[in-house]
Amino acid sequence: MIRKIITYPNPNLFKKSLPVERFDDELATLLDDMYDTMIASNGIGISAVQIDELKRVFLVLIPREIDELDEDGDPKTVQLKEDLIEIINPRFISKTGEQTYKEGCLSVPGYYEEVKRAEFIELEFFDRYGKKQALKADGLKAVCIQHEYDHLDGHLFIEKIGYTKRKKFDKEFKEALKKGKAIL
Image 1 (cartoon, helix red, strand yellow):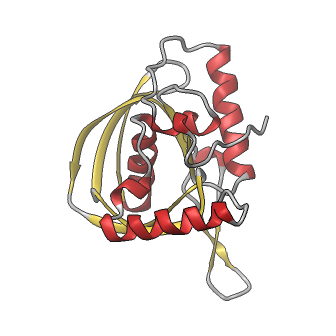
Image 2 (spheres, one colour; image 1 turned 180 degrees about the vertical axis):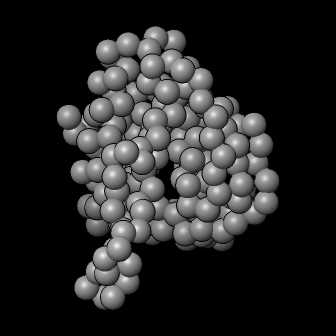
């Protein structure tokens, strides 16, 4: 089921999510709803807090290139459910290096900005069945995992964009609100 995504400045986006204690049908339904919502919104990641559930859960689904070209002649990408990573109660083991990536967020629609994050990460987490997992990632997958992890602690990517860019964002957001638009 597709759920409503809460958007900035909803105060629940700034609350710390609680650990999952039961790996049951309710959790499975939440994960399935998050997947449906993420796909319907053209996202590559979503955290439970973004659908107003304060649980330490997020999904990541990085598109992969296939052996076809799009209308511009570039490699075509697809999201395959078999590549979906369901991450519950995550804990970083390590974060090293640095990379900059232009990020967006389903909860801050229409706004994209460069953000610095670790280049390589190692993470421990649980899957939907309560089985402990480990994951190493770099590139876009590492960026997405760090972005979604921040949501679990009540942080948005706009907090990482630097003072000047944040002031510009705040000004544009206030102007959009005055014009009757809740998003940029």
